[in-house]
Amino acid sequence: MISLEHVNKFFGEHHVLKDVSLNVNEGEKIVIIGPSGSGKSTLIRCINRLEKVSDGHIFVDGIDITEPKAPVQEVRQKVAMVFQNFNLYAHKTIIQNLTLAPIKVKGVSKEEATKTGMEYLERVGLADKAHAYPSQLSGGQQQRVAIARALNMHPEIILFDEPTSALDPEMIQEVLDVMIDLSKQNITMICVTHEMGFARQVADQVIFMDDGQIIETGTPEHFFTNTQNERAKEFLSKII
Ligand code: ATP
Ligand code: MG
Image (cartoon, rainbow, N blue to C red; front, side):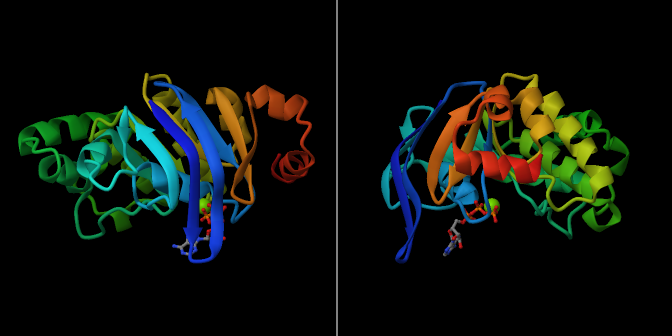
């Protein structure tokens, strides 16, 4: 489903992804952990071409998205992303936030986009907020809207970049619950998150990154019980 082959990424002189290779199968749930600045965001931003790689290849559903002529719009329809800071459109209502991209990018009718949008709002427990504006919602509610908005594009892959790290502690679980619910579907998920309880519950693979490299890959259980890598051990001791 997703395959990274010897990906390198430079920002100027700064080498931020160093020969990263990774395979993610359809329906797999991946959690990426690692210290600040290790390249986690850059890695997932390369997967939907928010960033261009400097060298190497990334295949999404068989399409090499690093090719200059890659059909970026087609790829973006398959790959949705949820950010740390929600990134909702402040001047649109919640339901308009959900319907905008399906109508504009996918050419879905307004009726259809609204119908499925309301179903996703229902699913994240926010149907009653359809006509509210983002500023009228709590952080946790805004993030649940952001997830519903991503789902309303019917993506095959959903990328999460620290979706709960901007939230007050009491709101974290409500967002994780939506993600756990989503993980029961056959959707491919790649989540940058340090919520190890979540990782334990849903992750097929946990990937530990440090200094632009994938240092260790394993099941959540492996990371909890027999990580050999000193850097991974030290990092885990700080977040668990
Ligand atoms: P965090 O946990 O703090 O979110 P991260 O693992 O997501 O960190 P990245 O945001 O991927 O790390 O950043 C990796 C490195 O690339 C950092 O040193 C960062 O300063 C640098 N970097 C990221 N984006 C840019 C950019 N647009 N221009 C220049 N340097 C960048
Ligand atoms: Mg980041």
